[in-house]
Length: 563
Image (cartoon, rainbow, N blue to C red; front, side, top):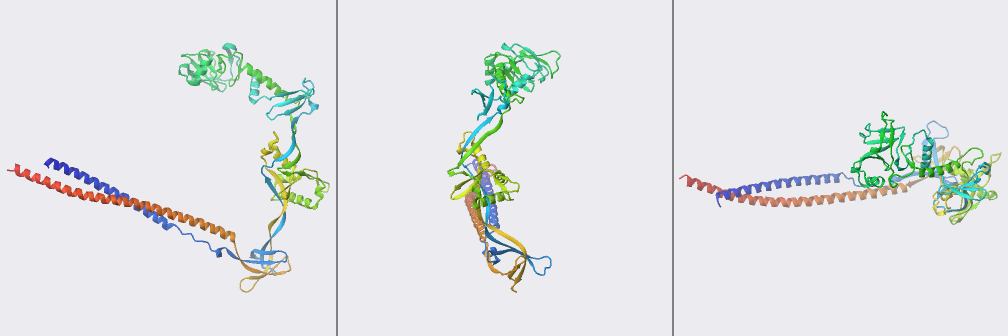
């Protein structure tokens, strides 16, 4: 190997050795990071607390009870009197469970109330317009919002009330005062003074937009138009190469070359001459145009709006000998309620309420619905079925219904039935009654009855109470001492333990899995580091060999040229 080749080889080996050393440093840094992650996981695991199951003793208490011959009473709370008393030393709360006759309210989804009904609006015939050739005596409001007007001769006509838009158009035209433009057929120009016309640039040539009573027209050059805007202009005016146009959001067009502002007019209130082109027609639409500066209406559209509006006005007169405004007199009338689903529905009569059991149940329902835990709407619906006589007693006037479901008799009211049936008054479809039906009954419910009073508690000398005597009872009762475990609380605690233990096991498993992944990555890096150490030793040996060759060449060179 020559001198130059040996030197080049030595330089290459030096560079390769540097790369190996650098890669080894990077691997050591990566292994350090992995070690830190492992330490963090270990610390996390050490910070986890192991769940412990609950003990029944934590939920077990000493309970005192006694029997008064009727109920088994339990002392739920007691505390010493704050002031001295010669007969009593404690305030004691006792309770027992008993069946209490209670009025209840339920709501029935999809009640499927079956009934007949009348659905109409009517006029008072005494107030109809005698001068009206139709001599209308009745009007029905149809489901689509139209009115069917019936005359005395039996003929019926259908009228549609004007829409808000049509009323606005008619009212706008009726205002007059020279504020509305009349641009006739073939776009003959008409000079009209608007209440507010603004050019953003002060003149037509300098302006990019024109605002007429709040409606903005934006300036475009025909050559720059594309898509639907260009199509609209082509359809309405034909090609307008090079011309400037003002267009509003509805496609109405004003040609800039046809628009002038009177000389000397101020910018906010000029006299303006312009032609309106409507893209809905073929070219310039024939007939008159009316506008309030926001809406442009053709004569044909206006005629339709005026005709409908006049009909609307005729329905809304309130003067003498004129048709009254439509009022609801019977909309709808429900009658003959006969079923709730497949349960027969029967209206109660006065004789039914003479039955003691029925009357007791209805009285209890009314009482509880009017109580603090009752329901205002239910109380009102029940009260509507009764009048009050001079002595303050309730007198049944009708409107209570009963039905039997699952062997139990329930009650409901006409107002409750009306509210549910009224959700499908269009076609009386029982399948679209969205309002839930209120229905009632009275049953014996297991109720906790508590009483608090002063008492004399005596102990057995070992810290436990043995007898009790209450201020409202002359009998001294012997107390039974028993340990009671709150099973519900204990079961709740055990369920929490099961949950916490499952979470502990899961977190522990996650930590172990992540640790195993890190250890696998570290083993891979360790193996690579060993390979680099082997490669570095080989490079070192080869570098020493090449260095010897270079040294030998240097030595020979000195001998040759040194004489």
